[in-house]
Length: 227
Image (tube, rainbow, N blue to C red; front, side):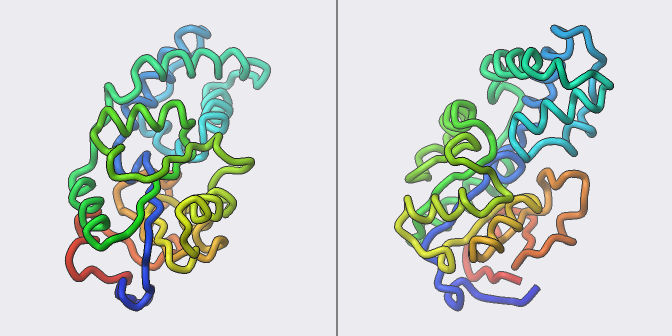
């Protein structure tokens, strides 16, 4: 990773991921999945396994969980409906904002950056979660995984978010926690910073091609560099 100052890359805006970047939502996922599995009479899945499955949208998560517990994919429609029902009921109850998230967002705003939240989480889950955690006021726009035809790691959501912000990809920083975010950013032509503490499908985040990895979004304050 090269050391690149924000002034050098001329950042005008930031696109920020939600789960694993701003909010630790693993507890919400586990609670909703356990309720879903109980409804279907299926075995439970442990939190560590769930942590390796999240990040690619609800559809991928349900398919992965069914496979993990040995259930046929023919149960997907029922499982997805029960998951949606339970998640809406517990959204935010078992989650917490990461230390440094507020400071990092405030620092980005003080730099004059325009901010968007872009997540693979369904929009109907993302907006209430941001509001419940007091994060919604930072963002001009919020896009969930159902907002566009394709999800991250496809670059389309990033390109569409840049359009909504009126910024160039090369001047729009992607801030995320996984290879999904990094791959989407690289393909879209955006610089990318990853956090070290999120959900990267069970793989070391420092092995991902990114411009920087930070241990807290608060590191984006002051004279931070990419590298």
